[in-house]
Image (cartoon, rainbow, N blue to C red):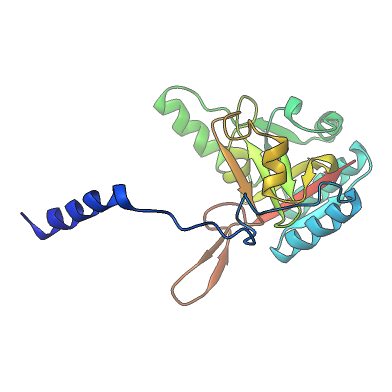
Length: 229
């Protein structure tokens, strides 16, 4: 028997007798001991979420109506010199009246559904790769970490939040939660509601062995969250 086989056999023989250590009830990651203030005032959640996301180099924009959303998106597009967006479907976006307002202003919303055949998919991905800004909604956000939650599904493709270098997310303030346990308690179906559940905490960051931090290597280098009423 090889050394590798002997090593694996030892692991197999001991696994049935293995015991997990007792969870520390005071550790914030322990669901048995983690508590959160369910009655946290909404303004405090907004302040904490903004503070945490800003610390991660993300930007937060509280707005009052769809006109404010239109103006902020136009400012971001103008900054990058573009007039196209890879976007979720309008039915998946809060206060989606702004879609018509931006379309009337000459902004093109590009759907990110991919064709079935390999050749068509390759051509569509090549076209989408040139678009610099993606627009999505959000199913929730965690005030204690500054992360937003996205569940993919029909009209909510992952490419809009992963492919472009700039990601804009529209988040209703009532979908702010104090913590991950609070979000999961309110959305017990979150892990099965779509093909993919992700939490995005700021722009993509990559560090190398020399401790050099680079933004936007494995995802968007900018994250803008528009907080709607």
